[in-house]
Structures are given as C-alpha cells and as structure tokens.
Length: 217
Image (cartoon, rainbow, N blue to C red; front, side, top):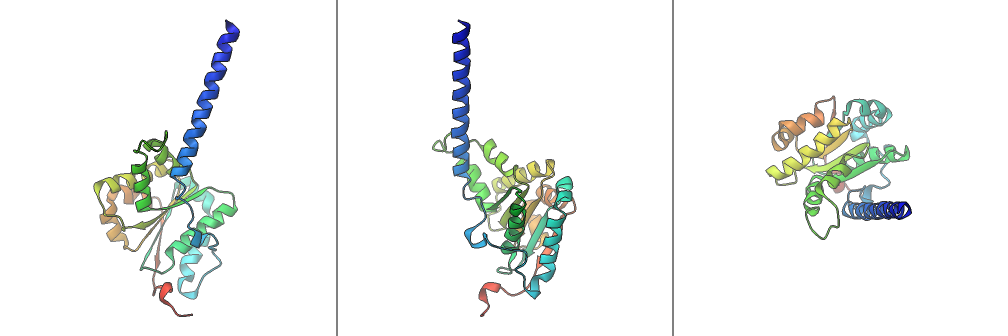
C-alpha cells in the first residue's frame, strides 16, 4: 500500500508539472507580441544624430548605472513629437541590457490592456489575469510605448496602474514613451500611476525636433 501511495504521489506531481508546463506555454503564446519590434531589434545606443545627442547620453548613463536603478526602481519618461526617435532609443536601451543577459520586455499601452482582456477568454488555456500581471512584473526593464494613444478609460488606467504598482513594489524600472508632455500624461494616467513611474527619481527626457521619418536623405 505504501508503494501504491508513493506511485500515486509521483503521478500527481507529474500531472501538476505537466499542467504547469501547459500553462506556461499558453502564457508565452499570449504574451508573444510583448517583445522588441522587428524594426528595432538592431537599435543601438551608438546610432545617434546631433539633434538627439543629449537624450542618447542620458540613456547611456541610465544603462551604465542600471544596478542602482534596480535599488530604487527609478525609470525614464521619453516624450516628444511623433517620429523623433523615442521608440528607437528605448529599444536601443533594451538591446544594451539584453547583451548583459538582463530580461527586458516591450509593449504598447494598448497591448498591455488587450493582454489582460485576452486572459478572460476561455480559449486561453489556464492563463489567468494574475499570470499576465505577473509577466509584466518579471523583467528588469519594462518599456510601455504609446502612452496616450489608448482611450483613457478607467479600466485602461487601472491596468497600467496595476502594472506600475507591481514594478514599483519590486524596485523594477519602467520606461514610458509618449507624444504627450508630462502635464498631459499626469492628467491622463492619474496621480497614483504617474507618481509610481516618476516619483523615485525617474529621468524626464524630452526628444524634440522634426520627425525623422519625413526627412529626405
């Protein structure tokens, strides 16, 4: 009987592990889009024009001092007009950290909201809302792009605030990117989220200038 009991326990552990593997694969599939966009996989902090030299200098300093960022959770806010290279710079920072074998994650604000909603669907096997939020709390650096593109609903604000809360509690830096100025971001996101993102010494980096996408080479 003891041998049967041991076999039963072993089978139960194996089943639990198999279910865990299935759940993890489902979570990975759900979050596959939350990665560095193909356009920016080779973005580098060495790729800088004179117009954004100061922003790139701050980004390089951020990466060089990243260990201290993990002690405070201080992140960065990149803001400015459309096409001034904000996403390129953020992904260049992420790529620099990836070379150090540090985990990073990129998504847009709208994708973050959609991923939470997707976890409610029965077709997403075993993935819970908790799993999605936990995923956002794992990487050393999280980049949330296109702050301000979403509709600004209470639910969207709740999702982004929850992500900010998780990361703030664990002193994990977040980079947010927006075409809005800091005052407009504060109004859109609300004091709670904005404070968690910038209240621990975050760098506010303004990327001014004409859209690089419209320049004739």
